[in-house]
Image (cartoon, rainbow, N blue to C red; front, side):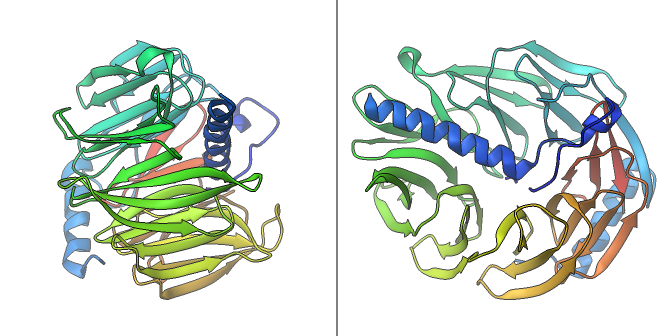
Length: 393
């Protein structure tokens, strides 16, 4: 989650639509959480029928089978964050939170004060968390539902929704190093764990709503070390504990009983019981992007150099097996996955691939788009500095 490497283009205001890399935002968010921690320390695949159904649903919703559709329009801000909430677009800056319809109307517009907003979207709700701050906003498609505040002026580390709108929140708590709380879709708290001995930088609820997976972050021999902890929500017992060797977790996701973790130095897939299925170290390669949200697959973009266009795109199944690999020589700005499709935004085109990296659809004119968001129906939202346009493959 998020979920990728791309550059920030210099020059004209229009060119500023090449947004900060999603991967860079994850790194900055992790650095912010690590900074807060240091301060506190000192103090399955989709079938062919499903593909046809997605195409039919797109036609019923948008009236077209291919090409670009309607556009969302908003004010330019280099700090804007974006997410799709149903047919709406959520645009969040440190000062304003907006939920927009495709006709340009704002369903809600709230003045906010945030330093590092993080967006997480579930089935019908979205959470906007000020990482390192003390406020958390919950929205649905009708606007703002409620606001949560951290206790006694302390701060949140993360807030993540799953596909059933269960919310996992990690935060500071007086007398402890961190606390993990889980809320169901109505806002009722169903689980809480207070950590005495380690900080909890991130957490998710599994799609079956049975477990919470949390990243435990602690200092060892002058460096941070991560451990992936899995708790049973019903019994409140620790199910498994798995160390992440020489890596800090940037992002987590869940598919069935699989937990996927992207780190700065490796990519891992494990079961909720703690069995390791893949532990892919990057070695001398650099992480340029990733997508964890495919149905039964994930994607990694690795390159020999920290900057540059020569990279290899690889997809993996949920057992850790490599599905396909593709060498790329064009600059990749962003990538995202939904269903059995992977969308890759290049500097001058958008290509939608199948999970085995066969080209499925292409759009050659992407304007100044620098970010993409795929929908469950297979449509792709191309996001620029002042507008977002829907592409229907």
